[in-house]
Length: 194
Image (cartoon, rainbow, N blue to C red; front, side, top):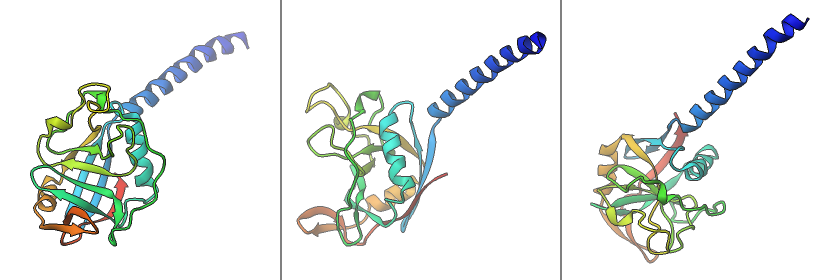
């Protein structure tokens, strides 16, 4: 029995160490999400190692099916396409509590990156996000102040920039006092992990 105990203890330690490393590796690996729209698909790679709370928040909405039936409600060519907060009737959806801004993670608002939309309060992001259509350096974090916090990038488009370009190219109008609303509704028909 003592021999078996001496053999099992190192084996148990080895298994625990391997499990811890596997969990840590899984947490830092990029996660992929597919946005299916009526203009085509957009594949996103998310960076939980750079923006853990933001990615967890986004995936919570994805897993709950929240984004299904939401629209890209604000589209400005050569700037960004914004969605994730309104349904096709332009009714704002109920959201979870806002999250802490992680824009100080060194990721930049470059063409094809996805970032969290927010109000003037740096820590007010909930469900809405935007995809940068061009490099938008002025949205990057510069300092921990109201003016300098920036907008948190948490992933990048890996497939579907043609879809992003097609959405950015739609004609827009004003609806219920909101500007830059696509005349032809651009719907997220589904959002899922892949």
